[in-house]
Length: 106
Length: 116
Image 1 (tube, each protein chain N blue to C red):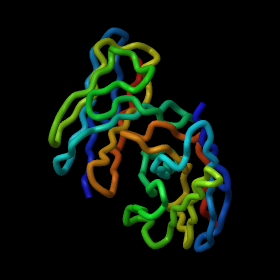
Image 2 (tube, one colour):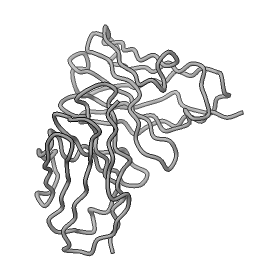
Image 3 (tube, one colour):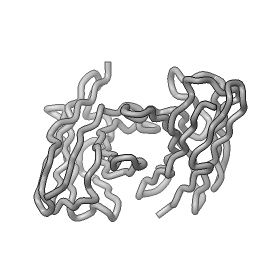
Image 4 (cartoon, one colour):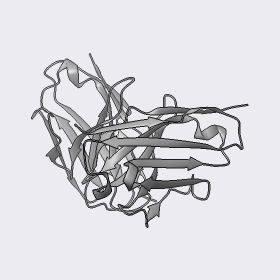
Protein backbone atom coordinates (compact mmCIF):
# COMPACT_ATOMS: atom_id res chain seq x y z
CA UNK A 1 0.00 0.00 0.00
CA UNK A 2 1.27 3.46 -0.88
CA UNK A 3 1.10 5.77 2.11
CA UNK A 4 0.61 9.48 1.43
CA UNK A 5 1.91 11.92 4.03
CA UNK A 6 0.70 15.49 3.84
CA UNK A 7 2.40 18.44 5.48
CA UNK A 8 1.62 20.56 7.23
CA UNK A 9 -1.41 19.06 8.94
CA UNK A 10 -2.79 22.50 9.69
CA UNK A 11 -1.72 25.97 8.76
CA UNK A 12 -2.96 29.54 8.69
CA UNK A 13 -2.18 32.04 5.96
CA UNK A 14 -2.84 35.76 5.60
CA UNK A 15 -4.57 37.22 2.55
CA UNK A 16 -2.04 37.56 -0.25
CA UNK A 17 0.39 35.06 1.26
CA UNK A 18 1.84 32.23 -0.78
CA UNK A 19 0.82 28.75 0.43
CA UNK A 20 2.43 25.40 -0.31
CA UNK A 21 1.04 22.04 0.76
CA UNK A 22 3.16 18.94 0.28
CA UNK A 23 2.19 15.33 -0.29
CA UNK A 24 4.88 12.67 -0.05
CA UNK A 25 4.31 9.10 -1.23
CA UNK A 26 5.97 6.03 0.25
CA UNK A 27 6.55 4.74 -3.29
CA UNK A 28 6.64 6.44 -6.65
CA UNK A 29 3.31 7.32 -8.23
CA UNK A 30 2.54 8.47 -11.76
CA UNK A 31 0.25 11.34 -10.86
CA UNK A 32 -1.20 13.05 -7.84
CA UNK A 33 -4.72 14.39 -7.50
CA UNK A 34 -6.01 16.98 -5.05
CA UNK A 35 -9.42 17.63 -3.54
CA UNK A 36 -10.81 20.58 -1.62
CA UNK A 37 -13.37 20.04 1.10
CA UNK A 38 -15.19 22.65 3.11
CA UNK A 39 -17.02 21.82 6.32
CA UNK A 40 -20.26 19.91 5.80
CA UNK A 41 -19.83 19.50 2.05
CA UNK A 42 -18.59 16.80 -0.33
CA UNK A 43 -15.02 16.90 -1.56
CA UNK A 44 -14.46 18.65 -4.85
CA UNK A 45 -11.84 17.71 -7.43
CA UNK A 46 -9.31 20.51 -7.43
CA UNK A 47 -6.15 19.49 -9.23
CA UNK A 48 -5.80 16.31 -11.29
CA UNK A 49 -2.96 14.59 -13.08
CA UNK A 50 -0.53 16.50 -10.84
CA UNK A 51 -0.92 19.92 -12.43
CA UNK A 52 -4.25 20.28 -14.25
CA UNK A 53 -6.85 22.51 -12.64
CA UNK A 54 -10.37 21.15 -12.34
CA UNK A 55 -13.20 23.17 -13.81
CA UNK A 56 -13.78 26.43 -12.00
CA UNK A 57 -10.58 26.37 -9.96
CA UNK A 58 -8.88 29.78 -9.86
CA UNK A 59 -5.53 30.04 -11.60
CA UNK A 60 -3.83 31.15 -8.40
CA UNK A 61 -3.74 27.41 -7.67
CA UNK A 62 -1.09 25.20 -9.18
CA UNK A 63 0.18 21.67 -8.75
CA UNK A 64 3.55 20.15 -9.37
CA UNK A 65 5.77 17.20 -8.54
CA UNK A 66 6.85 13.78 -9.63
CA UNK A 67 7.83 10.42 -8.22
CA UNK A 68 7.27 10.58 -4.47
CA UNK A 69 6.96 14.32 -3.90
CA UNK A 70 4.06 16.53 -4.95
CA UNK A 71 2.73 19.91 -3.96
CA UNK A 72 -0.25 22.20 -4.23
CA UNK A 73 0.52 25.91 -4.26
CA UNK A 74 -1.65 28.97 -3.87
CA UNK A 75 0.16 32.02 -5.22
CA UNK A 76 -1.87 34.49 -3.18
CA UNK A 77 -4.17 33.32 -0.41
CA UNK A 78 -7.78 34.44 -0.50
CA UNK A 79 -10.49 33.96 2.11
CA UNK A 80 -12.42 31.48 -0.02
CA UNK A 81 -9.38 29.17 -0.11
CA UNK A 82 -9.77 28.27 3.56
CA UNK A 83 -10.61 24.56 3.48
CA UNK A 84 -9.13 21.11 3.93
CA UNK A 85 -7.09 19.75 1.04
CA UNK A 86 -6.48 16.05 0.39
CA UNK A 87 -4.12 14.36 -2.03
CA UNK A 88 -5.03 11.07 -3.70
CA UNK A 89 -3.00 8.51 -5.59
CA UNK A 90 -4.70 6.05 -7.89
CA UNK A 91 -1.59 4.76 -9.60
CA UNK A 92 -2.05 1.44 -7.85
CA UNK A 93 -4.62 -0.30 -5.70
CA UNK A 94 -5.46 0.31 -2.96
CA UNK A 95 -6.10 3.93 -3.80
CA UNK A 96 -4.96 6.05 -0.89
CA UNK A 97 -5.60 9.55 0.36
CA UNK A 98 -3.33 11.76 2.36
CA UNK A 99 -4.42 12.68 5.86
CA UNK A 100 -5.47 16.17 4.83
CA UNK A 101 -4.18 19.70 5.34
CA UNK A 102 -6.48 22.17 7.04
CA UNK A 103 -5.81 25.65 5.71
CA UNK A 104 -7.21 28.55 7.71
CA UNK A 105 -7.30 32.28 7.09
CA UNK A 106 -5.13 34.28 9.42
CA UNK B 1 -26.41 18.03 -15.04
CA UNK B 2 -24.59 15.15 -13.39
CA UNK B 3 -26.22 14.07 -10.14
CA UNK B 4 -25.35 11.33 -7.68
CA UNK B 5 -27.78 10.73 -4.84
CA UNK B 6 -26.96 8.26 -2.07
CA UNK B 7 -29.52 6.59 0.15
CA UNK B 8 -29.88 3.72 2.58
CA UNK B 9 -27.83 4.97 5.50
CA UNK B 10 -28.82 4.88 9.14
CA UNK B 11 -28.12 3.36 12.53
CA UNK B 12 -27.21 -0.33 12.58
CA UNK B 13 -25.91 -2.67 15.25
CA UNK B 14 -22.43 -4.17 15.08
CA UNK B 15 -22.38 -7.39 13.08
CA UNK B 16 -25.45 -6.49 11.08
CA UNK B 17 -25.76 -5.56 7.39
CA UNK B 18 -26.76 -2.50 5.42
CA UNK B 19 -27.03 -1.75 1.71
CA UNK B 20 -26.34 1.69 0.29
CA UNK B 21 -27.61 2.88 -3.06
CA UNK B 22 -26.49 5.66 -5.34
CA UNK B 23 -28.83 6.90 -8.08
CA UNK B 24 -27.00 8.46 -11.00
CA UNK B 25 -28.39 10.85 -13.60
CA UNK B 26 -27.21 13.34 -16.18
CA UNK B 27 -24.66 11.06 -17.84
CA UNK B 28 -24.39 7.63 -19.45
CA UNK B 29 -23.84 5.61 -16.30
CA UNK B 30 -22.71 2.45 -18.07
CA UNK B 31 -19.69 4.24 -19.56
CA UNK B 32 -18.01 5.02 -16.25
CA UNK B 33 -16.23 3.24 -13.46
CA UNK B 34 -17.75 4.18 -10.13
CA UNK B 35 -16.41 4.27 -6.58
CA UNK B 36 -17.35 4.59 -2.93
CA UNK B 37 -15.33 6.75 -0.55
CA UNK B 38 -16.04 7.20 3.15
CA UNK B 39 -15.18 9.72 5.83
CA UNK B 40 -15.39 8.94 9.52
CA UNK B 41 -16.57 11.83 11.72
CA UNK B 42 -13.90 14.54 11.92
CA UNK B 43 -11.49 12.30 9.98
CA UNK B 44 -10.01 12.12 6.51
CA UNK B 45 -11.12 10.40 3.34
CA UNK B 46 -10.81 6.65 2.79
CA UNK B 47 -11.36 4.82 -0.50
CA UNK B 48 -13.77 1.92 -0.05
CA UNK B 49 -14.43 0.29 -3.43
CA UNK B 50 -14.29 0.69 -7.21
CA UNK B 51 -16.24 -1.13 -9.91
CA UNK B 52 -15.67 -1.37 -13.64
CA UNK B 53 -18.21 -0.33 -16.24
CA UNK B 54 -19.69 -3.81 -16.66
CA UNK B 55 -19.28 -4.76 -13.03
CA UNK B 56 -16.93 -7.59 -13.84
CA UNK B 57 -14.02 -6.08 -11.96
CA UNK B 58 -14.15 -4.83 -8.38
CA UNK B 59 -11.47 -3.52 -6.07
CA UNK B 60 -11.34 -3.05 -2.29
CA UNK B 61 -8.87 -2.09 0.42
CA UNK B 62 -8.08 -4.73 3.02
CA UNK B 63 -10.16 -2.87 5.62
CA UNK B 64 -13.43 -3.89 3.90
CA UNK B 65 -12.44 -6.79 1.65
CA UNK B 66 -14.63 -9.81 2.32
CA UNK B 67 -17.25 -7.73 4.13
CA UNK B 68 -18.31 -5.12 1.56
CA UNK B 69 -19.51 -5.75 -1.99
CA UNK B 70 -19.83 -3.08 -4.65
CA UNK B 71 -22.24 -3.70 -7.50
CA UNK B 72 -24.14 -1.84 -10.16
CA UNK B 73 -27.27 -2.02 -12.28
CA UNK B 74 -26.59 -0.17 -15.50
CA UNK B 75 -30.21 -0.47 -16.62
CA UNK B 76 -31.22 1.48 -13.51
CA UNK B 77 -28.18 3.78 -13.46
CA UNK B 78 -27.59 2.71 -9.91
CA UNK B 79 -24.57 1.84 -7.78
CA UNK B 80 -24.73 -0.21 -4.61
CA UNK B 81 -22.61 -1.04 -1.60
CA UNK B 82 -23.60 -4.10 0.41
CA UNK B 83 -21.98 -3.88 3.83
CA UNK B 84 -21.92 -7.01 6.01
CA UNK B 85 -20.44 -7.74 9.44
CA UNK B 86 -20.40 -4.04 10.22
CA UNK B 87 -18.01 -2.73 12.85
CA UNK B 88 -17.97 0.48 14.86
CA UNK B 89 -15.03 1.67 12.75
CA UNK B 90 -17.28 1.58 9.66
CA UNK B 91 -19.17 4.56 11.08
CA UNK B 92 -18.78 7.27 8.44
CA UNK B 93 -20.36 9.33 5.73
CA UNK B 94 -20.29 7.29 2.53
CA UNK B 95 -19.95 9.06 -0.81
CA UNK B 96 -20.41 7.61 -4.26
CA UNK B 97 -18.25 9.15 -6.94
CA UNK B 98 -17.83 8.96 -10.71
CA UNK B 99 -14.41 7.84 -11.83
CA UNK B 100 -12.70 9.53 -14.75
CA UNK B 101 -9.12 10.74 -14.66
CA UNK B 102 -10.04 11.61 -11.13
CA UNK B 103 -13.19 11.33 -9.02
CA UNK B 104 -14.93 14.13 -10.83
CA UNK B 105 -18.44 14.07 -9.35
CA UNK B 106 -19.47 13.17 -5.82
CA UNK B 107 -22.80 12.65 -4.16
CA UNK B 108 -23.85 14.53 -1.05
CA UNK B 109 -23.05 11.53 1.12
CA UNK B 110 -25.06 9.27 3.41
CA UNK B 111 -24.33 8.67 7.07
CA UNK B 112 -23.87 5.17 8.46
CA UNK B 113 -23.64 4.75 12.22
CA UNK B 114 -22.65 1.38 13.64
CA UNK B 115 -23.54 1.23 17.31
CA UNK B 116 -25.39 -0.91 19.79
